[in-house]
Length: 251
Image (tube, rainbow, N blue to C red):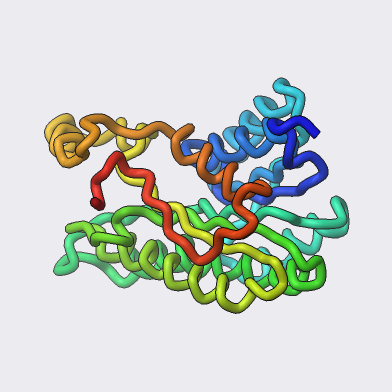
């Protein structure tokens, strides 16, 4: 089998895959031959664009609407995927939101919204897929954390807590499932060129870039390439790890 199609026959679920890092991950997995299920909650049109892009490049994809913070809805989505495709091999928990605020002004709703989507959402998908992975005796779980979860970040107590929680979740799941050949790892992007970072005030953006030893933002492809590697055979003996894609920010 050609190396670039090493994921042929695999089924991947990528949450929050309509844009940004999630969309890039979906594209990379499809290029390697996986059937990619593009989960979305906000914009159906963006998810359909991601699917069309994959299909135009010769891949197979489908858009699935689901709020991952909803435990029952997650279960229904995963049941439908297994009924239709027969298996899931790769789970990428990328869905995330921000509600930035200083802790003295942060509302309960802002805190809960971020934790429910970013952290509970990952628990929900892993929980509903764990029995399937165990029965299958294989599976790759890749959780998209953040350098904010490694170092903390002023004005992001909720976001940093959710992303740090993902790291703890990843390590615990890795320990529980490793005996059945299931790998769980976390990827922690730093300052990546996306719509969100592009909308930052120029002064804040310049300050962020100045903190990067490599002197430039990363690209969504930098993150997606690592995720695709972790999803493949070359990472079959890697589990419970956190990989920072940050140009040296957390050295």
